[in-house]
Image 1 (cartoon, rainbow, N blue to C red):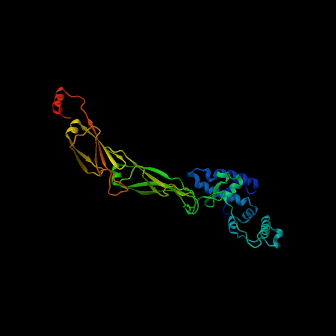
Image 2: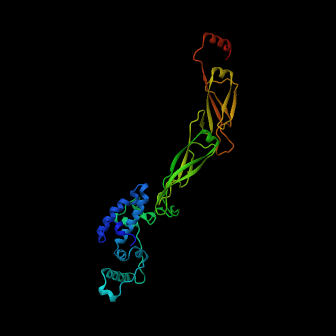
Image 3: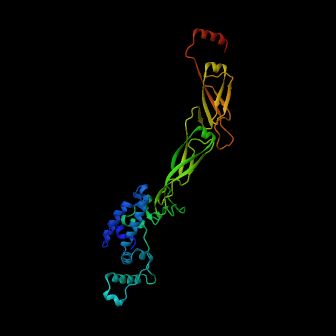
Length: 355
């Protein structure tokens, strides 16, 4: 017979209409896709579709009669043997009599055509049994799985699925984007870098079967990118049956640096000088983020809180290739905690006339 609708609906072959409805309501509440977590949704969608189809067939006297006599294949194809001849009618079985009754009924209802199996939408069955839930504006928005589609009972498509990918026609639902922090060193953001990211995600085929796949994504960090920059890989998130996969987004984060601090396109260096160095000068030796040695002589007297700006030695400006921000050196002058009487005398002598 193929599919056993009685077993799917958990009823016996003599089940009444009330028995069918009670069993459908109980199972639909368990397996409705909207009542199951994402991890269980593919299984729930398959079960819900099977339950709906079983109820559709068994609650319809004509469909049930064909199914009982000839099975699922005959029901769906419309191809089944003719009823027994009248000569054999006196000794025919109850099944044969039922077959004759069906054919007589079918000729009356469809005199010019053969029987065609027209399954009802799962959403319509669900709404009929439970009643539609009122949505915004009083519209009916009861949602259920319908032949590979998620539709609301007012006819709006909320998500279509075909061959493992959601349809791009009409309205559809897409899973919320998934964001992951991508830590980058200041050197990487200065020079640019390609990072290989291994991801693992769930995908499902047209039948709803889920499998886990691994993939290597290449994330290209451009020179000068800032914290908060987002790199999007469309539809690389987990896939649910009937829903467009989520976009996978990497969000650039900046690791702290031992020497430099970034402010926009500028780099900041805090440099401590002794009082002697602030007064007499010093040559600074800085290692840049791309590994160069930057020598910068201090020839003027440096006052506490002073700032020296070196143009074009900051971060690359991503939107203006070839240009960079500034390097700002902020000075803190360290004063001696105490002086001897002799040192004070020497300072008075040396600096006494300095203004």
